[in-house]
Image (cartoon, rainbow, N blue to C red; front, side, top):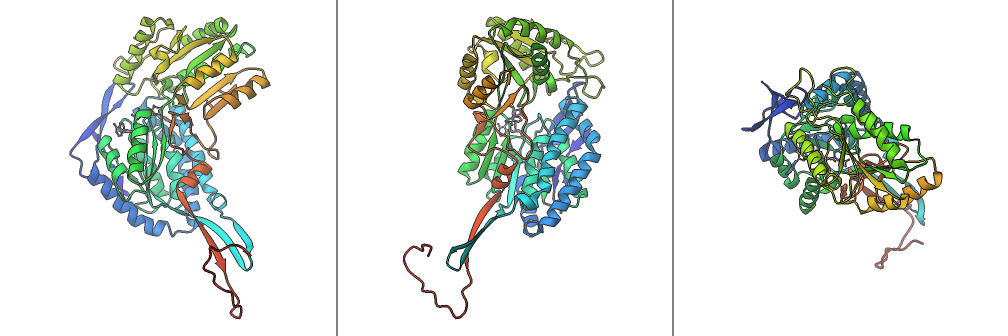
Length: 498
Ligand code: NAD
């Protein structure tokens, strides 16, 4: 049985681990590896390696750092298929979907390649007579990322390219459910010329996370995962004096107005709901059908849900793979049963789906629930599976009120032909990322990524210019170079410009 080890100071190490946990292939249901579970000792070893590396890496030139990022980007292109297969084998998503997340993550590397431009400071000439002011930004030191299972390549890539390009050193604690992508990325960084100790991977669960949150040598923590853990990470890390980015869970609504092209809307909502088996933070989990749109929309959604091709992620033509664990499959199946018991109409029932030759895989089919209300569990809980709930509303304003009352505010979409409705929607909705006739509004790497309310704890979104700001701190320098012969009086009152 393969053992997945930590990556510390440029090489694999079992660390102090006395404990390990199985890693499954969700399509077969079989254990395929064991991942070591790190704790305080391993985190401390990684912090020491990263601290030593910081001394030289933070002094490296912008050119050197940019060259590493260019080389790393090229390796991600060349190894996209291989990394995609690694992700698919542990997560369950299709290889093409995994390649999509790598591409999205690679765009953050491309943003980091432009470091020389985005890190430029500013300069003010003659703020007072003979006095100039300029500012510049410096790295924080050792920073850490704690990431979820659902995007084992992309979500860490939201963090480490910017942290490293700005001169920090990085410790990644990936999800213990699909840990191999992190080690593969570490090898690519090494081949790109990144010095040992700049990028480290410590595997594990709560013990490793707690060690990161409390370690005095770690300056900042980036977290993406479920809301309860995001709240915990935010509280603990800030209590220990660290900067924190903490992105949480989601319940994303797609509103369909009667003037929308129903076939188009249903097509995109189906892909947004069932793509990656609904295990995306931007998955569409609620369709809000407004007025006359409802019956026609349900009809098309039903047809499309029944057409989704479910199978192993590495079989060409598969559109939806299994869920990540057996427990996840059981949770989702139970939620469909609860919805029926609470009065929802189960239009398509994905429970009990068997894939030939993969009877032990963690598969469930697409489920479509109609007449869901805001009081039902299927509406209130983040199911994180291939379940689409339809809520019926009388008007756009009612749909907006429903979304604004929801505790989550990650993503939302509106399908309409009306510019006025789209403008009203985007201005009044309490959600951070909005799609107009786009079901999964995923901002580009040069914009920030992050929701509102319980989808983002604290006030730091991730990547883009926000990433540069988060992983650096500013210095403002006020300079005077008097001529040797000039006699400028030094005053004891608070200095003002003259
Ligand atoms: P999770 O919260 O269970 O795990 C995230 C990380 O926290 C993992 O590294 C895990 O090891 C660690 N962790 C888990 N339990 C912990 C505990 N008790 N104490 C300390 N650390 C703990 O999330 P997940 O199931 O891996 O991922 C799915 C969740 O992530 C969903 O809620 C999804 O919406 C969310 N997510 C959000 C975004 C976003 O951009 N907002 C993006 C991707 C995923």
